[in-house]
Image 1 (tube, rainbow, N blue to C red):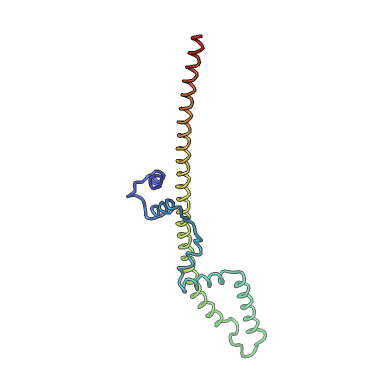
Image 2 (cartoon, rainbow, N blue to C red; image 1 turned 60 degrees about the vertical axis):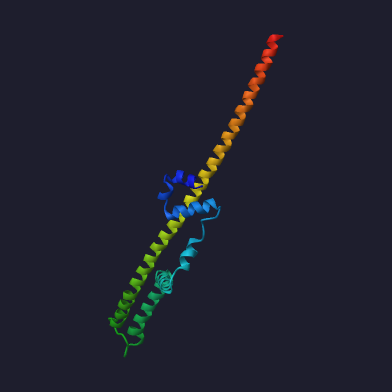
Length: 179
């Protein structure tokens, strides 16, 4: 199988990368390479990474946007219409502006962490896809080699049978000429 992999990859054994060697080894052992890469990736996530993903998932949803719009409308109505006297944050809503600025200051880096993690996840998935594709190519090449060998054996056997038939035809024609 290593020779097939080397033929496919065009590299000597020393030039093969660790991933290529691992895939060739698994192919030789007839073990699968594919797995649920998403689950594998999540299994290595720290609490902070899972928290950042969750916050980004909620903060980037329509539910959050609609809930936040509702909160802003309620805040504005409460501080202008319902609490006309002694409103905690009268128009122009300076306290609300402070809260929104702090929320943005906290939410932006968390979303960036989640985006970096998504890029890391994409790289991990691409590497896993490469391994699976490489093993599939190696297996296809191995099947081609097996079929080629089988075809060559059948051709050799057919050639032998043709030679035997030719000998029989020659013998038969010689007998017929002597009569």
